[in-house]
Image (tube, rainbow, N blue to C red; front, side):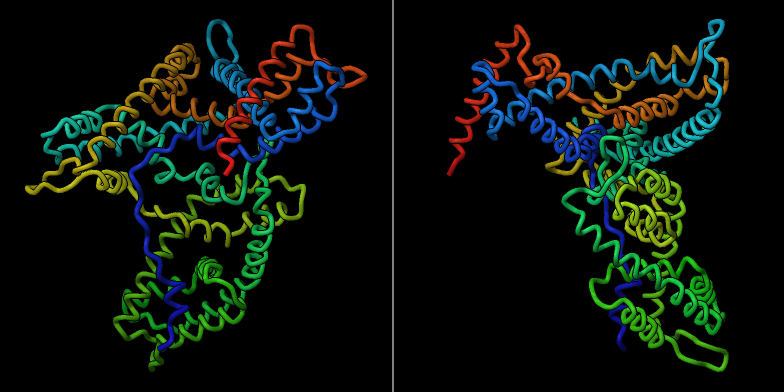
Length: 505
């Protein structure tokens, strides 16, 4: 019985996670790096062409044209960019509240037009606090199973029963599993897209040909959904409803979304003619069913097991697709549509097929707090018998570093969030006031600020340029008093060249 393609389409086992924590801010900066580097290279090239002549700048201009000169200048630009980011962080919280509230008679009142913000904030806070409570309960349950004989055991137990644990694990690792949002879509599509200077998503410069080829595949598959849906509907009509198994199969085959699920799976089956793949799929589907007087019936146990796995994956995909639908559409809406490639992706990602396809790649469709906690801790804990666990041999140092870092980050967040309490005390809206005083409220505010800072552009090159040069009719001329910068710059270039020579094989 030929069922290779059918099995490939229907069966996919969920991979396990890893015990890790993502430093979100760092990941976001790395994601934006290719676009930032491209902008900086363009700025340096334009600047180099217009550097004024004269003895003072002749050697400097020559150095700028070398790899070492570019390295030194980029390093100086990075210093100014970090200063700008620090200044933005210092002003971020006051700016956040000023944008959304106005101070009247000693009370903060919601500004006109911010009603949607209020609704979304209260929803986010409620979800956060609900999830954190579940995580806290799961952590307490596992902590009672740890025997606590070693320092690492006791430190881990202390952390698991501290308010820091559920909050930090949720913020850093678990939120995207329990409540996937646009941030998760950014990660899932991060190899293809990157945010540009305006905060819009564009296809990465080095991935455009690959993205174009994949988009062609998707467009072919989209055209195939309708005939797949029509044929599956006919199969659903003919399949008997003799037992629970057949009823579930019959129901799935008749659902329009199942056609998108099958079409999405066919994308991952490598190259080849799509029409032939579809026909082969239905031929193999015909091999696992037999005609009876009452209709089509699936009789062999092995075939049922494969279909049960298929149904499970389909239901998982449906659930996560529903969760991701809004986030994926939000992501698509932020794609820069100035080129045909981006327009094509924007259109494709707004379809049911894309939602199902990306949902199928997400591995935590059915995850709940307790399951995830046990999965994460299961990587560093080992069974000791008598229903007891302990930090696994060789993992004590890793666990200790992890817990200490989580405590450190929690205290930093707690300290930074103190001023949120002060504002919350003076809010006229009692519901918002109560929400902002919770850890969920603080997270919602800080998360929003983080997103705003991410979108904010910092131009370290322009700051460096204005500090040391003045624009003249003859080009960029050195400001008075900037000679020392030139000397230091050239000295650093010499040092970099010396290091490059050491590495020259």
